[in-house]
Structure formats: C-alpha cells, structure tokens
Length: 303
Image (tube, rainbow, N blue to C red):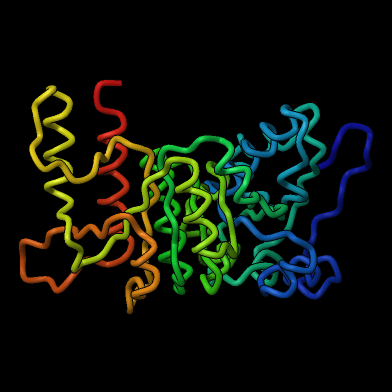
C-alpha cells in the first residue's frame, strides 16, 4: 500500500531483512528505551493507536504511530485500518508484509496480521496532577506484564484519569503488557517509574485522598460503598470514614506480597475488599477492578 504520488511499495517477504530486524529490536526493553518506541499488535490495538494518532495530530501534538505493517488478508478483513492510516494528514504508510515477516517482528507465536510501531505515550506526573484528576490507579512494584495491562484496562473501563507505575514495576511497553491493555494504553495518561512518596505528596497537596488496597485493611469497601449510597439520599452518617466520591488515588501492590509496610503507611486509609467465600484473596486485576469501580460509581452517582 502506498501514499498518493509514491511508487507502490514491494511486499516484505524476507524475515531476515534489515528493516524486519530493526522492528524486532522493539521486542526487547533496551531497544524500546533507545528509540522510545514500542509495538502495538493486533487489529484492536492498532485501531486505538491510529485513533490516538489522529487526535494528537489534530491537537497539534506529535505522532503516535510511526509505521504499520500488515498482511493483505488482515487489511481485507479490517479495511478501516487502511482507511484510517491513509486519511489526509495521517503521515503514514502501510507496508504489506508476510506472516513470516510479522512473526519475525513480534514475539507472538501466531501473529494477528497487523503491527504498528508507536512512540512512547507516557506523560510526566506534573501533567496528571495539573489536570485535576478524580480517580488514579497507582501500581506499586507490579511485576507481571499481563497483570499490569489488565489493571490499566480496568482503570480505563472505570473512567480513571491516569495510571501511575512505581519504580521497579514492569515495563508497560512490554509486548505482553501492551496486548493485555487491549488498546487502553492509548486512552488515558500513563506515568512510569514514579517515586511513590513523591506521587503521594503531590496527590495529597492537590486534595486527592490516598487509599491502599489491603486485605487486612481497617476499612471495609462494602461499608464505604454503603456510606456513599446513603450520602446520595442525604442521610446522616454517624462516624463516617471516607467519602468514595472524593478525588481518590488507589494504591495496588505486588502480586505476591501486596503493599509493603512503608507503602501502606503513606495512605490515608487501608481498605479491604471483603471475601465471602473460601478463597484466600482476590488476584490483583480483580481487586483493582472492584476498588476502581467502587470509586467510579460513587463519583458518578447523581451526575
């Protein structure tokens, strides 16, 4: 596929070609950091990358997508991708590639037929705080890329304003993490490598409450939701604890160890998600989803 006025680009069929090797370097962390680029694989991720690309250019920002590689079959199945990439002002060219080439570019056993080379999309913490966010998810030392992507996707679905990753957390640009976000990485601001103490100080100064998701927390999430519902009916709440409708940042800890003692100490409150069955606890993605939706519902009640 070629841009108007350009000669047709020859299909890429050699998985050992220099261009293919160059794209494949983005599978590794060092390659991503050196070029500040990452791969978005599959039609859903590429679709959302293109939408973000057009929005950024329309707002006078920089390009999100640098290049797209796709099989003929995938473009026939998802013609909207070619249409979006070829839109006026997109500055993009779609290169036709074989399945073998896409497999060599990515780390997937079964390529999804299309991959986009994207520029990093993370933002500084100051930009997030300045936007006066109402709901933030902060991931502390989360190690698994699938979990990180799942929480980011849950935060997006709950309407959160940002997701912040602490130092020692997994690289959200890891191909598995990007796939797990299902395109949500392009929907909301992401801050990387943040110092938890600095984040908490900045959020607190901006009037944002800090809640730590902790299975042994002194507050019960169900109780907080009941109090929030009562407030919506102007009912008096004796000994009220925390108003979920207020701007909030949730802290979520490491998958195996949870939040460390010093991390919990930075929170205003520790909140437990009640477990009514025999399960020992909830996994990170489920717990984060429950907590974020509790806040989202309280903040949207009556809106």
